[in-house]
Image 1 (cartoon, helix red, strand yellow):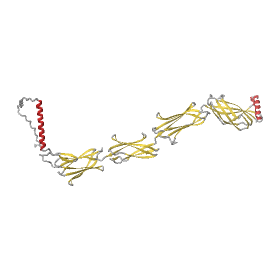
Image 2 (cartoon, rainbow, N blue to C red):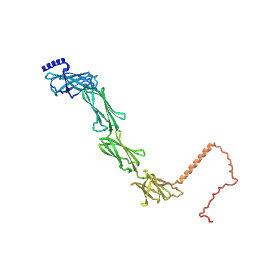
Image 3 (tube, one colour):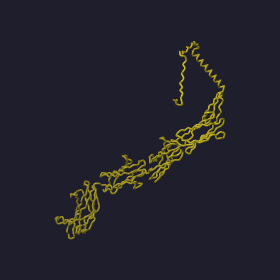
Image 4 (cartoon, rainbow, N blue to C red):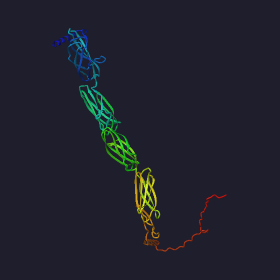
Length: 535
């Protein structure tokens, strides 16, 4: 080897003394390329192949230079190759050459050509000049941003996110340099101009591959809608932006509501049925507000458990008031409305006997007044039955069919009843499958002689009573009271006039009409003929 080196040195000296026209030119080829960050260095290997038809005993690396696309030599590069001397490089043989190349920071980015020059000697001491060209890419930016992506952490592959889940956004950043680079990373989550999540980070990108990853929590307070996810990486050499539209859903949908019955009786059971589709297990509050003519009549709030899949909820509706009722049904989570619906139904209250009174209209006749209340807003068909008994015998018994109008209805019945007997009565109203009964008793006293008593009929608690007039002692007491009041009045008048007697004056005579007393004439009477007069 030492002899070869000495020989090579001698040959080099000889070559320097020879004219350039005595050398022959051969080319080494390569398929490799070199990428280099300006202001940095790059190391690696290239494979050089002896593409000529010559076999060289010794090959020596001489120098390099860099040209741009226009053939201009570009300065600012340093190159070191290892090894620099090769022996026995036969035709089509390939050698691996290691390199270390650096570039000044003022070199513009672009594609250049690296030229390598070798001197090669054959076994017969013929000398050849060998050139090799290597594509050289000068990169201006240190970071290579990979394509970002986002997914739902709990359900990868989903095109939307549920409240309570997390969005993951990430990307790879390749630092092709040999020193760390500082970047600013920002992620935001917004809708309609309002930012619901924002996070900023300062990160250092080490040489090689780097993973940048953010997690965006989607809270339950976020309303449903389509949000915009924005992801930005920025440094002195450039900026990378990624954005995506992501829908946010709660995951529970009210898809239908039905009613057990549109018309029910007062106090009868009635329900609404809600059908929900859920993608999660969650606890909700079920609120039912019932109105009649715009006035709230009932309100209930109950917790309910919703499971993933199809859920059917049974909702009890109030029927303790009659009329047209509307129930507003809401499903809420922490005050947020998840679903709402409304149902309307009628509650019919059976009419009832509100009151029964009676009045004695003659000595032995009584008129019963039955007050019937229909609390509904529409007329109903009903039947009123009555039964009058005395001394265990039925005096009257019958049924009356009638249409009961909304509101208060009054029915009057007149009966001839015996005196000095306890008479029992019973009135029964049947409507809507319900009955209302009113019972009572009365007793008729015979009328007292007109000189001593004055009969008075009263009505109280469905019974008739009479109250007698005052006795002769009561009359004398009344006379004494009247006389006493007259004496007091006279004394007051005498005191006011000062005890003086007034002069009597004779009253003036009344004027009389010269025609005598006036007597109003009688109205004329006209006799009506029932037949036409004969001609």
